[in-house]
Length: 115
Image (cartoon, rainbow, N blue to C red):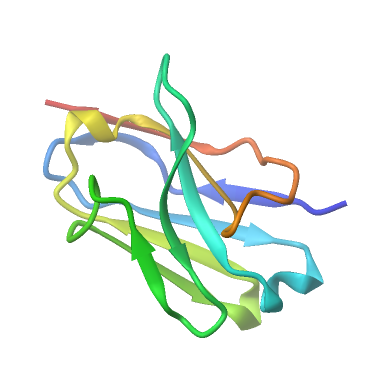
């Protein structure tokens, strides 16, 4: 069973720059696009960034220019560098496959942005 372990969140002041990490145990990581999703209280989960197997990236308009997704295939890991955080970025952040989430969700990592 695939395990996804996210880390790096916490309480951050507006304008802060945390870096989230996600480690996967699945060997097919190498052939999957990967993505970061987030779910804010009372809202639907949304994808904020994805990265293809070749490194091509896409971002939601709400985070474009502030967040950067990257992957390390050797470590089966995907990261999200978050800059210029806003209170509306407060959410639980999860990683999963990119086209659509195929694997069981991990526990995620909470990011809380204080104004």
